[in-house]
Image 1: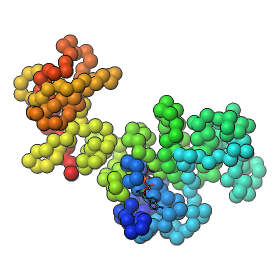
Image 2: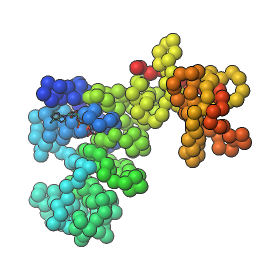
Image 3: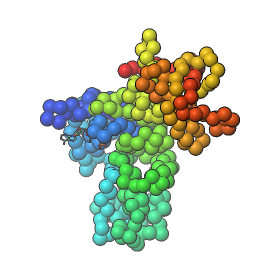
Image 4: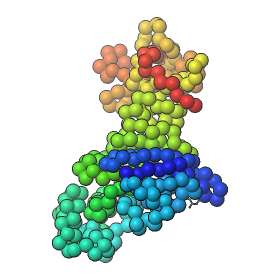
Length: 321
Ligand code: ATP
């Protein structure tokens, strides 16, 4: 559906997106994940046509659209700061793009009904934006985009302005919507949990470069680089003669018996509900290790206690620095 061929972007001679090639399948939920300033939005804007690549090509549905203006590309955008028309009702906001396209009235009604229902706005269609919560306003922006039935929906931190609980609800709703509609989603976020829970595939970006592309499962189980290993979930990083290795905290066990791979002293204990985490100073190195614990433990660990930290060799992942 989308083919990026060695696209790159320079601003004032400075590379903000290094050459990137990527194929996004029809109906796929693909997320660009990375810290602020890593180039995610710039990639999205190149797909949309708001930004011309310095080099490379953008293909949409088998057509080279590199020189096609944004308005002629069969896609829609949803931003963090959804620009709803304040003087229009929810219904008119959703219908706006369809009216601009001069779609017949009956068909507009059908599309608006469907989009409002899918985004749970049917009861609110006569309200004005100032009478809606932030989450409801963002639903209107999403409804307006899907009413157009685009082949591709580009979403730039669409839930970024919402509080945590609302964000979690809308994450599930959006994912469900995407599955139901079969629209290709390209989603930008800096929130690794959000990326993990919604995406079919994730592109991890850092400093304008791709660190890793994979399914959430692949990225969690087999991070390839130090950045990927520490940006998505937690990892303990060790140097070994062969290079760097990463071990997930939940793959580690704390033991009092001798024979552990590492020994250290507990510096702090974090209680996180179903697990506790031990922060351990290892072998005098200023390294902290988190260890998931069994909460039914009869002799709980204490701060200052000596501890052995062990794990299976098979849970070590070799990573690039
Ligand atoms: P955020 O999550 O903060 O939105 P991002 O990963 O989306 O970040 P981009 O918005 O793509 O990052 O920006 C990437 C880099 O390019 C940043 O360093 C930014 O300052 C720079 N940049 C973006 N647009 C321009 C521009 N028009 N002129 C000059 N530099 C720009």
